[in-house]
Length: 292
Ligand code: PMP
Image (tube, rainbow, N blue to C red; front, side, top):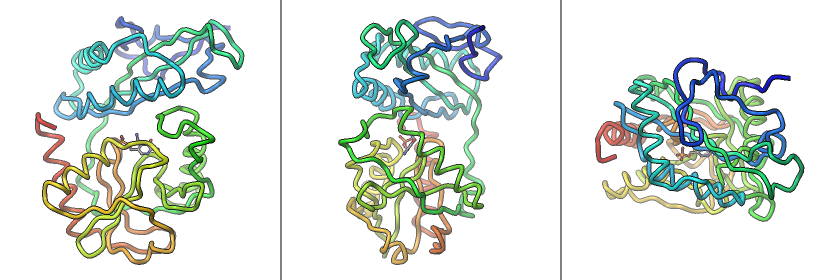
């Protein structure tokens, strides 16, 4: 049987293990370890005006995610940076989404991965920034799934396998008419959405769950920087669901979501307001500035 296409991207070129190949030729074997056993990590990055936002931070996180799964990427941070830059430039897409992905190959197919090679590819596709309608706000439900405890999963890795419960949560939310789902952690604390972190506003101050047991968000870090630059206090702390009714505004943050206000969490209403707008404007300024 023929190997499957790596991505549903048939035009243009993709960076793959150090060279550019036609997307149509980027094929992997069905016996790929990453497909069967989840030995796969990835990044989600955006470029604005042809410039990849926070590229170095994404590269560092990718290398770290791979290490957490016992994989040493056979390319240095500098090589990955250069590969992403060239992928961006060759694409000619000004506002893009980049998807670097690292996986174990098909050299051995069993639980052990001692003999598998580490592969890496970078895909790119067009993605516009959607700031225009953001203040309308989205609706979140609470997921039935909880983020796993650190003793049960490599929670700091952006690992493919950790997204199984995100996909289940996101699709269940959509079926109930919500935009996304908010997930609690294994002890019932508010954690994050299926692909974004969450911030709340009370009395002009920001509150966000401590990122102890989930992914260190690059957008979350940017929001902390933007708040610090304006002397807006931020409380990184444990937030329990019974506090949801005590906040006036709420927004989610992530590379794809950017800064997106929330107008409801499972029946609790929020009014996207001044602080959400402030963060949207500050983020918009950063993504379009060369300094980042
Ligand atoms: N949480 C999850 C589960 C995610 O997949 C993402 C997207 N990478 C985020 C949060 C936001 O992280 P970032 O700001 O680094 O994109």
